[in-house]
Structure formats: C-alpha cells, structure tokens
Amino acid sequence: MAQVSFRSLAFLLLVGLITSCSIPQGGLSGKSLHADYADGIRKAGLQRTAMGAQWLAAADKSLTQPIDIVIPYKETAYFAADKPLATCYRFSLQRGEKAVVKLATVPASGLLFFAELWQPQQGENPKWLAAVDTVSRSMELEIKQDGKYLLRVQPELLQGVEYTLTINTAPSIAFPVRSTDNPKVSSFWGADRDAGARRHEGIDIFAKFRTPAIAAANGRITRVNENALGGKVIFLRPEGKDYSLYYAHLDTQLVQEGAAVRTGDTLGLIGNTGNAKTTPPHLHFGIYTNGGAINPFPFVNVNRISPKNVSADLTLLNEYVRSKSAGNIHTSPATTAPALMKQSAGAVMKIAGATEGWYRILLPDGSTGFISGTQVSTASLRKQKLGTSQRLLDQPDNEAAAKLLTEAGASVEILGQYGQFYLVNYKSAMGWIPVRQD
Image (cartoon, rainbow, N blue to C red):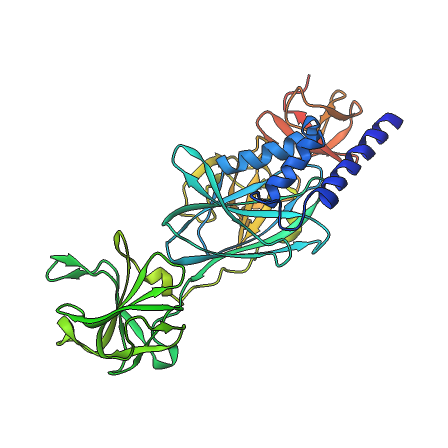
C-alpha cells in the first residue's frame, strides 16, 4: 500500500507541475495550449502511465469519431476525473458567418479546460483553427470556407468537471441598411433571373426610396460608377479582407473613390436605377472575391436563433441508466436522425451529456449516440439470487478486473444488461456479472 500511495502522489505532483509551471495562459509560440499541455505530459514521462496514455489517446480518437450536431446547440455534460476522455462535435458552417462558442464550467476556475475549433482536411489530419480563451471561456472566429467543422473539448488530467457548451453563429459584418429603417430581404442568393438565364448574385434589401445604404465594415471605397444592370453602384473593400462589398441600384452616390469609411457611414441612398426601374426601391447587396461572387447573406444575417435550454434531468449526468423499451440510439439529438444502433429493453448506458430533452450516452464499448430523455430509467429491473459466488467485474468482460467477490446465495439488484453481462448492485457496489453463471 505504501508503494501505491507514493506512486499516486508522484503522479499527482507531476500533473500539478505540468498545469502550474509548464503552460503559460496563451500557449507557447506557434502551438495551442492543448498541444503545449500534451507536450508537457510527454516530457514528464506521463505518457507511459495508464492515465497519461488514455488522455493523449482520447484527444486523438475524438477527432476521428466526432458527434454530429446542428447549431445552434447547447449541452451540459460531465467529465469524470478518473476516466480521461475527450468529446468532439461536428457541425456545418458557412463562409462569412462567425462561429461563436461559449463555455461555463463547474468548478468555474482553477482548472484547464481545452476547447478548440478544427477544420477537416481531405486525406490529411484536421487543421487547427482557434481555441476558446481560457479566461473569458469564449471564442469568435470568422469562417472562411463553407463546410464541416470540429470542436474538441477536454479537461486537464485528473480533473472532474461539469460544463455547459453553447455553439452559435453571428454575422461577421454589419447589415448594410439600418434596422430602424425597416429593411426587408425579399430575394436571395441563387434565385432565377431573366427566366432562368442567370442566377441572382446577391440579396435584395427592400426599403423606402432614398433610405441610406451604409458601410457594412471599415474600409475604403474602390469604385463609384454606373452600369446597365446595377445602375448607380459603389464598391467597398473592407480592411484586411479578400473580398469587396457591392452596392447597386442606388438613387444617389454620396462617396468618392479612395474615401476611407467606417462602419455605419452613409454611402448612398437606395433607389431603383439600372435594370430595377420597374421594381420597388431596393438595395442589391453583393460580395465579390477574385473567384467571383459569393453568397453575402451569412455575412450580414442578423436573425440568428438561440439554442433551446436543456430540459433533460441533469442529476443523471455520469450515471448508468437503462432503456425503458426497445428502440434506436440516434447519431444526433433528433428523431429524424439516422439510427446508430437498435437497443433492446433494459440496455445499459451511461449519461455523458444532455441537450434539450435528449441525453448523449456512452455505451460500455465506447460507442456514443443520443437517446430521448423519456426513454431511460434508473430503476432496477429485478432482484436475483446468485447460486454461486461471482466476481463483480469493473467492465462487461470476462478478462476485466474484479472489484470483489459476492457471497454464494447473495441477492443482487439487476440494473440492466449489455451483451452477455448484467450490471448489478451488490452491497452498495456496482459492477458486472455474466448472464450465464457457472
């Protein structure tokens, strides 16, 4: 026992050294805080311990086995101190919107909690993009490409933590007409034009005649002229961006080429010049890159919905439950989501997190998915008398370690089943026994 205690103490001291001394708040130059922490584990030799190896493996594995979600998304979840895990969420984002990530943890301070945004790469490892600030517990990042993105979350070693994660989006530039002028977007990117001969390369924002069209970003006016389609037009190049903003169908242009403007400055007055002479006054707003026009709506869309609050019972976090009836484990929290697998009544699973009225669950084999909160129970199935003494296993595997030996003829509460094993309670200890007992 003395040797075990000494090794445990040494391990804790090494982990504390990594946390307190090796990693500055912002991470080392050119590396993320998570990468620095992982390097600290290796330099301390902790990758040769079970906990250190599991922590490193969990970080890598999570990026290859993400959970599919739809944003906006809000989840409350739990990481146990004695089981190093990481969770990775996969979701879609559009170019021009900002990814907005917020975290709240319990405990609120005194721990390292890593949350990083990654972009999958075809045939290569994911590309690291940004991390949630360890002080503000928030992150905003403008998205440069449509596609799938990954958010990996993981606490430091030996740290139990409950966290609430919120993922949402926001516009990256201002709307080009003030909200007080009651603008209305009525024609979107890709709509047919000229009987289908061409596609709409922007959005049409309707407002009263001669309503101000304003700068959607700080920048410089690069062109003020007139053409057959757009009528009186203005091009604005935002500071530090690789695209230009296009304002068309103006009745009046109020800026000159080369002028520096700030967000909210009036550039012109909305009209119906060019090919819009027969339409009500509106601003055609577009965004152009070297590769051509791109959809401007994600850049300026202010009508973002907030995620629904968690309604599932949070007292079940990190608890084993069983399914009430046969049904599906889903790949994401929706009845319309694909079925990950079918579960029989009484199937055992552990609650890892909760979102709206759903639970994110972990199966004993490491698989994860979602189940409705109405479909789980903590009540035992029945009591059963054991004919012989049984090894109470810590995993549903005959080769797993035994917590203790039951007495012959003892009664156990059967909580549920996984494969050929029952999860049971015996004298306040929980563990696994074979369904068929010799």
